[in-house]
Length: 288
Length: 258
Image (cartoon, rainbow over all chains, first blue to last red; front, side, top):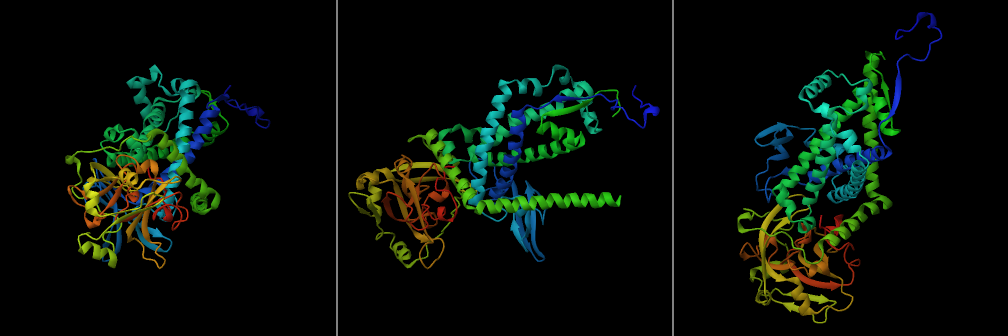
């Protein structure tokens, strides 16, 4: 049944693999996903521009130049020119060309993040803040629609909460091994997200992104007057700023792994499912 | 193998090319009239929603003496570079007067001693710079609302403009002179002070001697230093760059609550 019959080789029958389309993503999920892509890209790049204005991160209630910073992106002038570095705690890494010192037009300049990673590409803190806050509004509205829809219509409970069988340690370990071998689910198992996926998506949607918004709001002196518990929650405004940066880094890490997984586990199928909602499933035992 | 390599290079070239076009697009959008206006208008949305939540009286966080920054970073002008200011400084500001005028029934000219004799408020608050750093300091001064009450506002008064002694950018037309403005809601806020003391001592020159503004629910660039004159106005669009402040004229938002 599965092996193509050689006598019919000249007039191929429909492929013997049973390929079925399921509806994977609702319209709300698809639209909010792509708006989120836009918002996070703009907010990351304008955020790096804002960071460039003071590329030092502190912990505590206050933090300025004379206070101890535990993450610094800086530059040093030496005999052979400018050198960029990233310092985390007492560990200093040379990063000339990327962090601390990079090319801007024809000149090599001290600059925490390089101009090709920032919006605008030239130094303009005011404009970067405008970009950041405009897209922050869009992000928050978009996120609220996603979460309201997700809880209301059961997307989060049905598709993202791990099923009981998926939480068994043996199952999770199996998934870790499968991921490491780049073996992806087929057949009925591909109808649902695997446990690692579910946990990651929940972490991003319910922890990292809300944390991003909350630590962002904590940096606003106005919002701190409205919600005085905010700075206390994160150990101070400078701490909130540091957490904002670390959480953003975790989101970047998520996006890198997410895109890599999308490419490795069937790029066009995944991409199509996030555009028109249809996701093809090849049934097990039948070679593709 | 070779074709795979060049295809990979082409793809990388395509992606970086597309990135460069997008970035240039963002730069162009920033400077365009339409999108540039949209970018700046998000300020209104932020301000209206914060004001809705803030109300008139909600206070900025106050800290304890234990929280004070060991060194409070002095930003912007460290010492105004003018004959006039240096003379005032040499004299211990005995000849300095704060002018209060504009849309007021009773223009005022107040000496430092007169200000110090008015009931004062002391508060330990956090100063948040737009660049991202924060410092905690103690401020003592006269609530601005009290001065405005003494001068009695005329109908039509909407904003309070602070004219400063320092020129942050040296220009021929004087447009580099520091100034700031706030609306009456912030002007009458109980924590909005004309501060003459910092951390229990007379306000140091680097921090704006003899008098600076504290408007605690907004960022550092609103905290104008070296105050010389307070002007009550119906609008600030005819003043210097028309955006209500030195940094506002150079691209920062007038509402600095975020």
